[in-house]
Length: 105
Length: 120
Image (cartoon, rainbow over all chains, first blue to last red; front, side):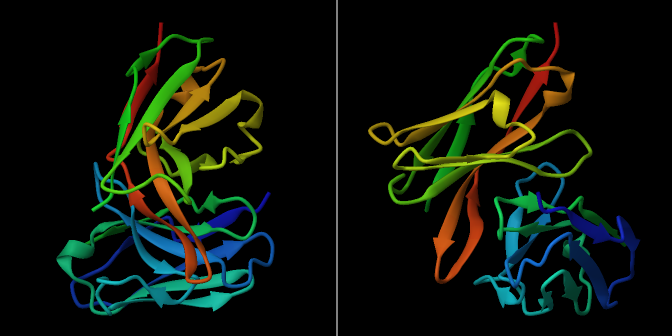
């Protein structure tokens, strides 16, 4: 099984900040890593696929990078509506989610 | 616009079987992978497994012995059965469509989620 570890588990930031979340895979997963945003009481929403591709309609302040076992997710110029929990998800071998990073302002 | 809607009992007794159905509207169920994902209150997402419209399945190894998925293309529905449930299976259960292909592999459409509580 591939395990996904996100850090930090929670993060407090201010409007306008640059925020970075890290996701580490227990095995090399190449670029097969997605990022989702989940707001309370809602289903997750895809933001980034295959490590660095921005989903259509997602603001350009969101970006992703990395390959192999280490990946990053960045929000440039944090906005109030970005308050949510963010999850990474690998799709190299079956599917696994990270434990999530709760972002607070 | 594709929409997914979960349905099924909100309360299941311990040791019994949890059964949920996801109805797809606004598009065909054919030629896609369809997954079930759950989320205990205040916790993260757990992928349960997926089914292709041919009936081919993949399951999370940690749940494989208790999970059965099926698909009914005539009704544009797919289903989940989870046997021998315990309180640890209490969660919001989501169904989701998975895009698999050269342009990426990701969950693009999700249901709103349905809470299933395991309790006597």
